[in-house]
Picture 1 (cartoon, one colour):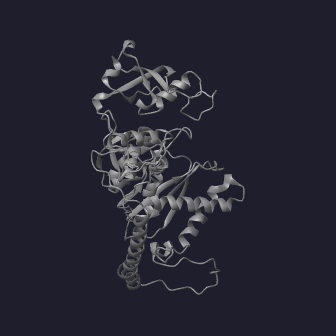
Picture 2 (cartoon, rainbow, N blue to C red; picture 1 turned 30 degrees about the vertical axis):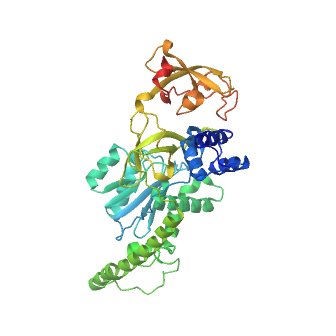
Picture 3 (cartoon, rainbow, N blue to C red; picture 1 turned 90 degrees about the horizontal axis):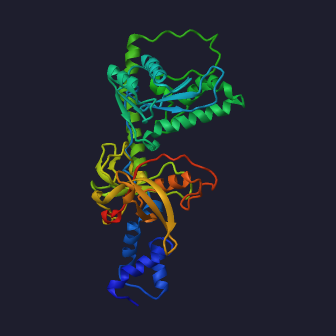
Length: 442
């Protein structure tokens, strides 16, 4: 039976509020009560998308930009760098492993270092680039060990382009990430329980990784980098002395690498990357978030399982060249970092409260329950006196942080988190916006 048009919204909301389940569950519950109408599924989907609680907690299918493979066609032109550690402190005082990967040949350089302070990172890079030549492009994540004044001065002096990937988005620096995993895994297999000697095995691991035939190029990285085969572990003491290569032979080898080997590697690499790109784009949902659209951002460091999966809403300012998004919060302030699409989900565009109707919470000073048994909180507003305190229901808050801080202050178990009842968490005293309107402060 189809209900009257003016009752449909109320029926949908009641079915949803019963358990904040998804659109499929809403439709099934309504049909189970003998009701149905055209486009009920579409209306249920829109209702779930506009629900504030579901925006915070529902895990949406991740959005992705089309895969953009990193290409380099000449050895030494483009290096990706990353850091592994902290590892066990070695007898020589090393705690970290600096990993450099040549994008063209996949030749890797591993350097154990004592710490990740900027001067040690830059000094190590200077040594490597003085051996192999300065790059055109150096790629890294946004870690402070790579993004600092000393690195900027080195970049300007050497003239390379230092390209950064989005924070918490290791996929963008995938080449270096994979080599970090491979190198650390290989070192683990060699230490045989003597972990403080891990740095002794780094040179051997580097050699082994560079001698391994790459699936991408069908050649060992060593051979592509140095235009010769790696000498095997043979006995060369009684070998007949070889005559040195003539100048013409050396020039011919260089021409062969430039005219035959590297073009062939380039063609194979492009074929492989295009195949990988097609496969990635086919199996990943590609989403473009328009300017001024409203999104929720995944919480990357949740305090507990019952905390929201997402925070927001935020407004899209623009899309960067790298495919990440510049966002602003409800008060109009830009987020300090750009956000990759895999951490965003689009929400209903009709339920956003205008900025002039939003106010900042200074602190929560009391709690109570309404007639329906739902929790309400007494709010002291930032910039207002005690006479403007108001009681607000949980759903008016755009963030759980002030509520969690309140319960931590009174050393009680919050009904909205998974902390232990007697474990007091540190309050950050953050001023956070909450959904409310001017009338609530009278």
